[in-house]
Image (cartoon, rainbow, N blue to C red; front, side, top):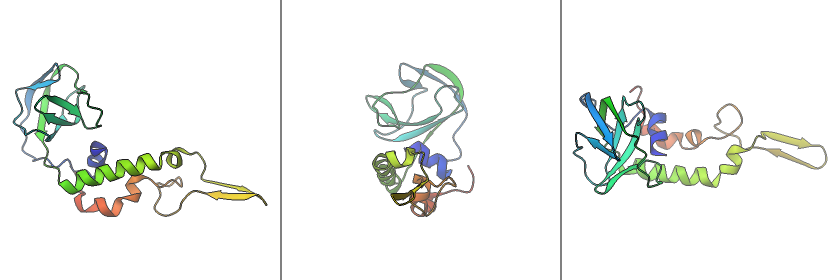
Length: 154
């Protein structure tokens, strides 16, 4: 979820001066070695197979999706590996958004925007900030709380 949030707000919380280097991904590790602390996230850019947000642990690298899998595919690429400095408020909000998405999964995937059977019942999806199709998205639901971290461009 953190990667989706970072994409949405155009902010990966990285420094802009990450050097472009040639990296090798092999057996779930990246070399040259990364100077990261346990639990720190990093962004891989310029890779054909591994672009995205990952979390460094002393015993290995995991995906941002909390599955515990490394998710790294062996390759050599020229790009950047940038340490991320994600504020605690963003990681807490990411957990809250994930819980909201889980709770509302049925409504979010429902094809019905409104239904009207005369004399029996009427059904309309929630209104408010919507994505144009009548469905309230996590982006709309949490827009006010995300806007403080939004960047205008990458």
